[in-house]
Structure formats: C-alpha cells, structure tokens
Figure 1 (cartoon, rainbow, N blue to C red):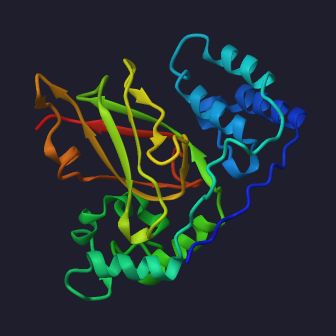
Figure 2 (cartoon, rainbow, N blue to C red):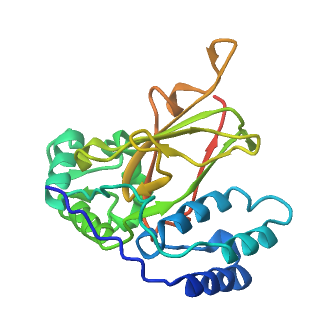
Length: 256
C-alpha cells in the first residue's frame, strides 16, 4: 500500500559544491532547501548537521569549507525504505479517527486532535473554509508524494523565549498515515537545538508527512514541561518541502 520513491543522485561532486556555496553566498544557509532525493546521502547528513551551526559565530565560513569537502554521490547512508502514505487510504483513516460528528470533514475543534493538520493550514485546506475534507487531505498527500523523499531538519526548542537545553524531543508520525513511518527523538543541546534520529535506524532524515511532537524535561524527578507539550500534546507539524521553514523545526513553549 506504500510507494517507495527512487533516490537518484542528480548532482555530481563539483556541481554540488558550487550550488551549495552559491546558495550560502546569495541567500544564507537558513533559507537553503535541498530536497534529499536530489543529493548524495552523505551530503544530506552534512547539511542537516550544519543547520546546528547557523546561529554561531563564523558559521558561514565553516559551512563553506565543509561543503568544499563534500564527497561524491553515494547512497549507503540513506534510510533503506523511504515510506509514503497511500493518499486515499490515509485520508479515509484520518476521517475515521478525527471526524467525531460524522459530517465528512474535520473542523478546527476536531483538528486539535491532529495538530499537524492545523500546522499545514492552507496547504491542506485549499478552499480556506477552516475545514479539511478527505479529498483535500488526499490531494495534499499526492502533492507530498511528488516532493522529496526526505528532509534534513534541525529542531529548536525555546522555553519562555529562551533556548531549552536538556529537553527530550520526540516526533511521532500521525497514525492515519499508515505503518512504516519511524518516530524520531533526541535531546536538545545548550543552544536548544537537536538533530533528531530515527528510532529504527538512527537516520537523521525525516520522511515527509504529518507528525505530532512531544517535549519533556525532568528536574529532580519531576516533569518541568506542561502536559500539553508531552503526555497530552497539542504540538504537531507537517514535514514538507513547501513548509515555511522546511529545514528548521521550531517550538516555542510557555509555562502555564
């Protein structure tokens, strides 16, 4: 029931280096959008890790040097089985899970159970009527199916406006997408950032789709973060090439 897209390496080594440096010089690394299916796997991992340096002094010089050393095309590091949701089946699953009043569409209240749909906004709610139908969701999944196989993204967590260090971050694929999507987790560093890793194979590359997030931090055995961010999470996101900041996932948490 799932489509496994191919991952061709369409850039040769020299082209990759020139393109990377060009994007950095012209746009800055923060706006760089490299679809993972179009890059050598080693380059994808390196790009994701470089995201962590972008708020630090000298980052652009460092990035330029590392890109010049980027190796050529190779696929050994890519996750073995990039998974796509089957659009019609996934849309039907979502309606079954979240359409509590049975009217054939998801309103804003119902989508609170799947915050990733709220995050997607007009990318899924095409007529902007504040509801999502099965047809709209299936159409969005078809679009995602034509985008990258994976995205390299760095996650940033703030707590009351300041970077939150030592927090556990978990991204769980929404169940309506079907089986085969791994969860990702990691712990934020002193800058509040983390490169999440797959629980199945350790990959840092996120399959595109809809995820819910859970963020927690314990101090003295007690949970510091309110339940709406973990056990009863209201956090969700759509991972897609055309998201506002596809290579940077950001959560701004606040105390109750």
